[in-house]
Amino acid sequence: MTLTEKLQDLRERSLLRRRRSVESACGPELVVDGRRLLAFASNDYLGLAADPALIDAAREGAGRYGVGAGASHLISGHYAPHQALEERLAAFVGMERALYFSTGFMANLGVVASLAGHNDAVFSDQLNHASLIDGIRLSGAEKYIYPHRDLAALEAMLSTCPAANKLVVSDAVFGMDGDLAPLPELLELCQRHDAHLVVDDAHGFGVQGPQGRGSLAKFGIASPRVVYIGTLGKAAGVSGAFAAGSDEVIEWLLQSARSYIFTTGAPPLLAHALLASLDLIERGDHRRAHLAQLIAQLRAGLKLKRWRLSDSATAIQPLIIGANEEALRIGAQLYESGLWIPVIRPPTVPEGTSRLRISLSAAHTPAQVERLVAALNELE
Ligand SMILES: *Cc1c(COP(=O)(O)O)cnc(C)c1O
Image 1 (cartoon, rainbow, N blue to C red):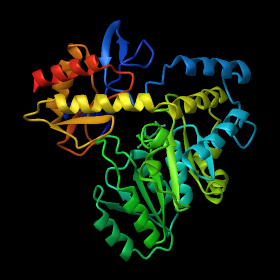
Image 2 (image 1 turned 90 degrees about the horizontal axis):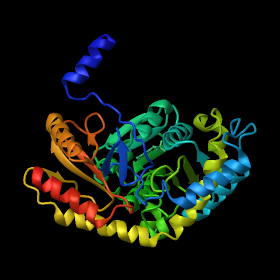
Image 3 (image 1 turned 45 degrees about the vertical axis):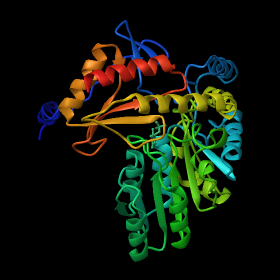
């Protein structure tokens, strides 16, 4: 197929994606084309992306360190705030050491491809994030995909796999469904089969567990077998990600992760802002409690007949509609009425499960959630 034909094919299957340019700061209300919209679209779960304290910290960081790192971390682009951030993050999630990456996508690519190679085996939940899947492809390891959250299937695969070096990788909170991985059971399987466990907590860091310390802390589990990945562009409200684990694992990542080594360090002003963000996360119980109330309000308020709400207790509350065209039509109707909820279609989600991905933030008010509930109940 030519590119023209490929694009036409996407168009015909209602799979062509488009972007909208936002003219205001990230928050519940966004200005697009001069119109004010109520959005349930971002992963800014704690409402920190435009917090005045973080804006001040970013300004202060820019004043001290300028706007660019100028080089990669291993040359001269590793700054004092990067170092301080790594130390704070490691202590916050209870690991020996952490490494700060420019994005979560790069962290996942780097971690998986560094910890697995040819002759190794990687076991991956069917609904894992694209960046983990690409990390596995890049690693050249044998790939075993187990059905979503299916521990028995994973155990069977682990038992029969001949590889000496095994890695199990899983999202902690699944981004398009909002449900949780069975982390204690996954860790137990990894212990039994001498495998490493890579936990991608992109949607859990900052929101799950005591003080937002993440999904491992929520379950009260810790092990030198675990490599924890948290991202910093979602609940933390800024940008970047980190891998945390044993001193040895992190040293190996620093020596070998190509997405860490061969890229310019993220602007140190971001690390400076992230240190302030960690303060807010740590002291953010009121934000997490408010978010939990909004989640309960949404779930109790929706009166569904044809559509199905995903079985989720997190801020990700997908409303599964089914066909691409219907999901797009509902999304467009909501948009017309001033509500912006992203429509997620294949290949991001399985065929026939196109959905409105409602995401809630501590910055939303109960009145805003009420407006969403009323609009959805009317369309259903
Ligand atoms: C968003 C996300 C990533 C990528 O993180 P970025 O910092 O946005 O690159 C990785 N894994 C999961 C599960 C995600 O949701």
